[in-house]
Image 1 (cartoon, rainbow, N blue to C red):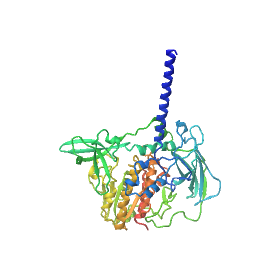
Image 2: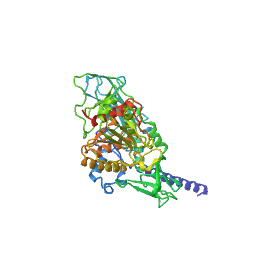
Image 3: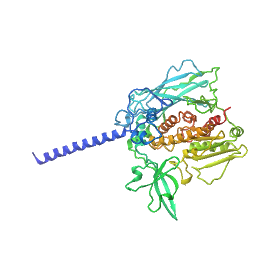
Length: 554
């Protein structure tokens, strides 16, 4: 054989071997990509027919009942079932195969029928890809609402996934006059798959900084909630570990080179460092939060003599329905209980008389504190010389004998530089309360946990649940209120889908306790205001009015 022919044959063999190796690497990546678990409760957003579908599986690798004594095997399996989510069963070869909201469509079933208040309409939604092909699997994250812009009326609707590219939505008719359907694709199923993998496999997408000070020396190091490879690095000695004595919660910081671990003095947000491919970034951005074209005709809803509102007194223990209420003239009417309006400072002050309210959470709950302070002139904030973002804050009204405290829910929290000693865990604060009929505990916890594996969040919730259950045993007249998650996050660090997953976990874990859940997810999802993690004042007012309806039910 001639030398040059032999060399060409050898080169061809090497090219074939290289191609086979690349294919193996790609398939390995795909297998890893599909190993995460996720999902939504059938009770509130995307409902599911229980047919076979592909879902992530990998959470058990980071957390099992055997290494968390606060969660039984049965409860953990129930939680995973509640959060199950359909993921693409095929390998995505091109972003053109992902769901494209501009190609999707919806139609109203029998739009010209006689419709009356208290009835429902059904909507059929077809998902398509960029090439206008009907999808053959489900898992897209849609949100639906019925609305009337002129009346400032709207309500939230549940969406059912049929796992074949079709979805249905049922929307309640709750006000007289015209009403239109709006459906938006928050994330394609392919984007959800990216969020799933990122959540479970990269907890260091967000990192924090710890500031060590002692004897005139200062050092700043990286910190986080898990002892992850990216935090540990190549240093076998790695980390300072901080274990909260009451709750047992842990926090890790890289060990300073010249200062002891006990010199940790301040905490702050560090930065963002998600690792995404170009395809993943395209999937997350291209189809995000876009209105789906469809039947734009108005549905004429006829008046009825029966008033649409609940007559049940607001009290702990209610489960949220779908819909949980509706807006009309920018006023939220609850369908869960007989909610009231508190349009004046006098009414709010009277409701809060002799109350001590402890609020713990993030900036979305801080909006409640700010609203009350701004609305009630006699409620005065004390200057505690604390962080303007993470507090704690305290306001008192000596005329009504009211005291309100807001403080951050503890680490992890993305905030500016703040004293480490001011960051208290919710469970630790609740364990230290005496409680009583004058005491109200309000908390929310979700927005700063969207970058972590579900297991870590579930553990934090059961620690809080244990503290709340203990408080209610020793002081059953204490009112405990949980503010749900709200919409507004739209990226890999805090997608609405990630928030929804955490919100469903919270509802499931606190389901059997006599607490109040203020469902602001529905209130923010269906409102006409631009999507924002911090809702406008008109939404906050309705949230606070619903909260006050439980504080002082008539």
